[in-house]
Image (cartoon, rainbow, N blue to C red):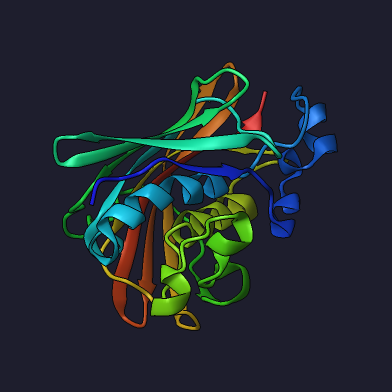
Length: 239
């Protein structure tokens, strides 16, 4: 099945207010006009055309790289516009204000075996039950209306970068922070109510005019099976 364009009005979930950049006041303090929509929510939107086209096959072994080029703001109308590039699907988030890609997600159908975590600064391991904000309804709460996750009893793929964001927020960021890029690889599906063991390392810290960036390797294991690995990048201290 060829991927189809899909449109949604962007929204923040209540839990995203933990990072002040996702509130009007916090965004304005950082120089933005209104609340930035969480990158992981925009990612959830961009997975919609991919999962509609490739289904369980992509959720079990696919992946891709998502790059956040400029913010999507709360209440923006977002057109998730796919194009087929050979064996890949690239999906762009276009906003009616300028029709320029705010976010680009280039997918692969087979992400390969789980890579080893690279050397770096280890962060504390954590065990998180896949329910509530980490469960199968992440997408529908954010506005993704695909019913596959509820009917098949699956955790939404946006939960994996959401767990990586949780690591950044609790162990790395200093104040407001911004998710900028992720390489996400799926290795198995996961069911709600399982327990995710999240292991992470900071493999690089980079200072720039925008602030300090951190790059993390993240591995997520559910009930003894590696379900996802990520290279996750964020501006963890705003200049």
